[in-house]
Image: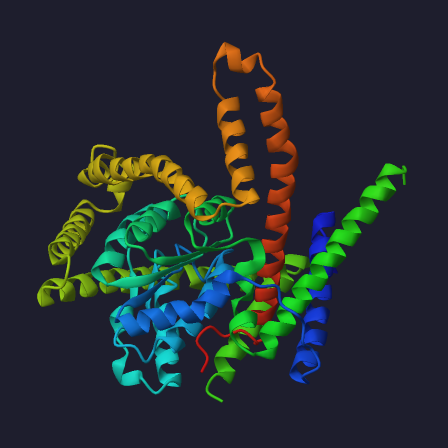
Length: 254
Length: 209
């Protein structure tokens, strides 16, 4: 058995994974012991979530969370997991409502997990009898069709808050435009540059870059999420410092 | 306790798959390929479940007379109709441009998606206008100026091309835009890495109670 590094990037990847794992372990333990209390940067999307869900509950409306066409069996799985994290929080906070959260996707592998997430959220709030299996929906099988289907869904299902979290690209503007015309409060979080640009333009609360992966740290008190967020920040600073060092060394001819 | 077995499976499969990328071992590679094949089979089954979900939700809407029920009827009828045509023609129809399946795909689906995609630019303009009204801040102005520079800089007019605008456009695209995009993508990569590590260590379980 040989450690076969095909390219230098494989070595860097492995190094980043090992360092990330070590940092995560350290900060998770510190968070678990209550010794990690970082000051989190304000993100309007997460600050507004409580109010958005409350407004939906009080008005008899619904919170819609769309996970785009993200799968749980390919390279987009991490974004799907981040979206499910947020869906779980939303599902829990809207479980007491007559109309619980609605989760949509354009990928069939994510559909059962969405349903399970909403069901478990209802169970945590002792509202399992109100759980509707139809709260998880496969709207279409491609992103553009999902956007088209969602524009009518937010009207038919009396949606008052739109949360788009996934690998949305420019088609997200179709959904946000329909939401804007109905005066919905909208949050867009995408790991794609086009989706983030659309979110910045059209959403009330856009999330840029890695902000979509930190919902758990902002909305729950789980030490795993907090430790992960701090480890992510430290890893970013290490990469920035490493990049600057390499640039300087290359510039002086080393 | 009931989640220990699924978490153990996730961790085990994840570690084996990840290790097989770095370690040159035939057994590990075979295991990884087998697991990947199982994923493809499960994804196919999930697709059937998803289509069933689509049909059941829309049939219930039509049955209850809920808002938008005529469109739900259209969805159900179209889904069943296209599935029936596909089953009758067989998998070879996918590669036959004259088949009914391909005619439906190219003539209806592709055309509809193209028209939807064409709406995107108009909605973006409308969204930008609304953004400038709602968020009157420096970043919004910078956003608008950047968009105008890039769009105008692409105009194939002699007056534009002979001006400084193309050079400014190139600088905007190659320097601040590329730098910002790389920074954002680096953050996304780090976020993806940390979520992946949480899954591999069993700390992330999307539907755990």
